[in-house]
Length: 317
Image 1: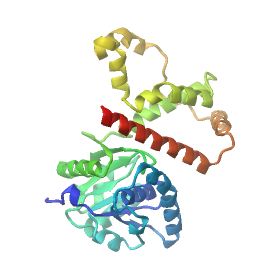
Image 2: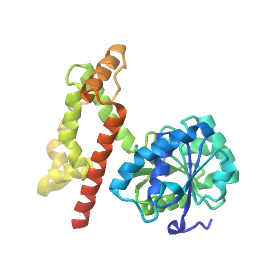
Image 3: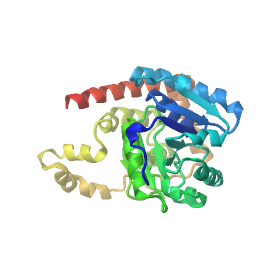
Image 4: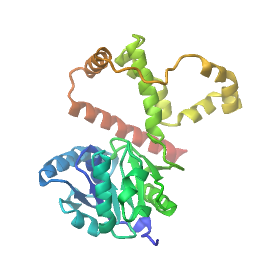
């Protein structure tokens, strides 16, 4: 199937008015694309535009592409209209398999035949979603990290019926659009980043449950310990560098036996009412009375600063 060159993509269609769908719409607008956002109901438009406006401040600080404007957004409840002129589709409807299958069954007949359809799904596989789609070969998963308008990572993988060429095209498109694509070789529940993130989350819950650390102590440990290093290099390269001249081989020989120590607990703890309350109370205490919007602005400001700093460091390198 001959597709447009990624450099020639102009019109993006997004589906969904939640934080992920709106976040994608904001991101593509900031990259200078024309965006048609499909929503279930006209009453969702105000929420969608509000989320885009909230993201725009950070996107402006990070730097907008030439011609980028929120005026290039079209909102519609007509799926046929949303799909008609799409060069790329980013679907972010709720994580309900029946709903997603229904959407892909409809989009398969509405979206131009040469256009890739990508899902933001985090809990379903494309093999499941594409089951009833009449054109499953051009469907892929493009799983973002939240918020998608600031986090570079997109994990890309096809389903059983996906054409590898469509997966490769999606990887090239996301890269051209300024993302950091990770093209996976096969479907894995939870993808890569979420599985690693949840391994830490499970261990954190165990430590809280056992009274070994508080919410605040755990966050302090990550923010001031491995966190800054992980923003520059992943855990594997950090260990490689940590091994000095001997690199990863020395690191594994020296510290490998410690991996068998019963430190970590891979099975999640039971979320009892007591543990739930302890975690919630700890998080609220750590928030210091700040509301969600204030905390989000603080996080986004930090993410923008990190992105700028890393960009400068990589240019020098």
